[in-house]
Every structure is written in structure tokens, then in C-alpha cells.
Length: 209
Image (cartoon, rainbow, N blue to C red; front, side):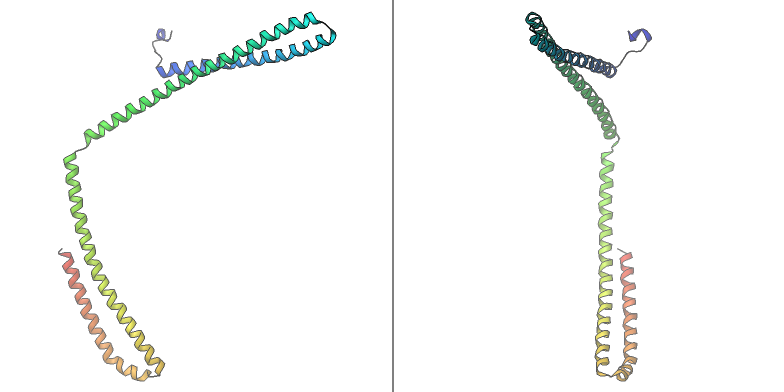
């Protein structure tokens, strides 16, 4: 009757309502089943009492009532199982509908993305990136070589000076070492100036690569 109010329920809304009705029916069936089981226990107690008192006819009538009660309990179990099966089917339908909706939206988004992708432009950009990346790697390797040469020479000179000083210190020839340091320092300064000049030249060459 929802169409009378100008609004038609969606399939998802209808599924929700059916699931709600099923859960309500299951609760009612479960409530009635428990009620019958309590009644079954009561009948058994009365049967035992009648049997002890020798009222066999009444006991037989109650036995028939007990059989019918148990049969009804069994029917309630069966009805609940059937409702649960229907509920599972509805849940499966609802999940399938949700998945279909998500896939439809994903397909639309993927289609929009594919239409927006300019493949030739992307290929051109990738080629430019590769070229610039190779150029940058070449410059980096050349810079690393220059720095390695500089630091290797520096380390070697420091180790040489350290060993040299240690020998003079052990022999107690501090004064002789000071005399030799005058031309040595001049020579070291000239070597440093030459290394600085070489470094500046190599860095200038790198800029032209």
C-alpha cells in the first residue's frame, strides 16, 4: 500500500521488512515451544502422581495428552528451522544485492578513469621520466667518483701523517720532526691547492653533462 503515499519501497527495504517479520515469527515460535515444554514436564509430574494413587484411566488420558504435546513441540522445532532457512535465503539475496550495487559503482568508476587516461600522453611522460632519471643517475655516479677520490686521498694523507708522527714520537725525535715539518707543510699546502683546483675543474665538467 506504500504506492498510495507516492513512495515505492526499494528491494532492499522490502528485504529488511521480511527479515524483521521472520525474526519476530521465530521468537513467537520459540516462546510457544518453551511453553509446551513446561507443560510437558507438568503432565509428567501429574502422571506420576496419578500412577502412585492408582488412577490408571486418568494416567492413560494424560499419556495421550503428553504424546500430542511432544508432537506439537516437534512441529515448532521444524517450523523454526524452516523460518531460519528462509531467513538465510533472504540474507543471501540482500548480500548479493549489496555486492551487485558495489560492483556497479566500481565498474562506473573504472570506466570513468579509463576514459580520462590519455595513453599516448602517459607513454610520453614515462619516456621523459626515464631519460631524466638516467641523466640524474649519471651525474650522481660522476659526483660519487669525484668525492671518493677526494676522501681517499685525504684519508691516505691523514694515515701517513699519523704513522710518521708516531715513529718520531716513539724515537724521541720531536725536534728533527719540527725541522722537517717546514718544507713538508709547504708541500702539503701545494698539494691541497692542486686538489682544490682539480675538484673545481671536475665539478665544472659535471655541470656541462
